[in-house]
Amino acid sequence: MFRKFWTRRTVLKTIGAVGAAAAAPAVSAMPAEWTVEETPTDGDLHDVAYTSEGAYAVGNNGVVLERTQEGWRKVTDGGVTGDGRDLYGADVTDDGDRLWFVGASGAVGEYNVRTGNINDHGSPQDNTNNFLDVAVTGQAGEANVYVADGSGIVSYSFENGESGEWNSVGVGQGYALAGIDFYDVTSGHVINTNGNVFATIDGTSFDKIGIADSNGSFYGVDSDGPQDVWVAASGGVVYRYDGAWTKTVLGDPTLRDIDVADGTGYAVGESGHVFEYAGGAWTEETTETGQNLRAVDQGDPNVSVGDSSTVITD
Picture 1: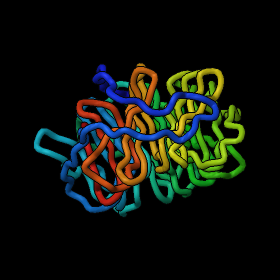
Picture 2: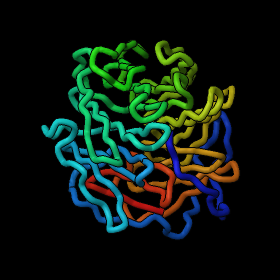
Picture 3: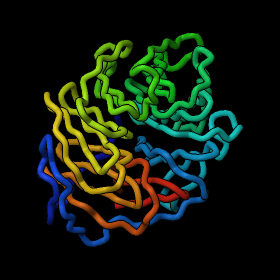
């Protein structure tokens, strides 16, 4: 994933030692640091990603928003084809020049952040399932595209999503694939809502790598290497894989997304909860919103989006 990233500030108070059986800790909140930004929409926002031109968010009714120096503006409010299908996931080519987004009823779009053009790659192999997330690797115009859907199917293209150049594979016995992320051209991870994580090194076949006795639903995944995987889950749980799975309980709220890079990152979830990871431990940060947060991406500034058009930055 393309990221603008820099070293974060020193942690003041920490919670939750990483461990396979970590108990729910007492939480010490930091002073409010995440502030609300106005947006020209009123629907839920489901994902956010940094491109070479800055941050973009996608959401209900096909809205695509761009963060500019003057604030957030609408790129489109009709989605890929103008019919208003909700958009649930977004990712960016390695050079940051193409924003790919996916959504309801087979929606797949490729947005050129330099020219403003949108290409429709929807309904690959006539698949009109709800597409929940997308991972993209490679350069603009030459990308590998991996789409995870609500019926346990990964649709993939090694030809920049061109018509007739898609294939698909069933993963996880039909449970919804809530998140997908790749750390290399054909290597990455996908999660489902039945508490399973799957790995691939060829982009075409997926092997289950856990998580035993998870007893929860998974919603967000950050794949940074074959033994560097983070999962955001229900019950305020973060799982980490570094050759073995460990579990940290951050609190009660369901966590919807996680983004960690170079030892620093964030997990976000229900009721405006944001947790920062740094120095090997998690810290809760306060925000100006109580809305459910659905996605986070690190950049300048860090951005999280969620229900009722919520955008907060740090």
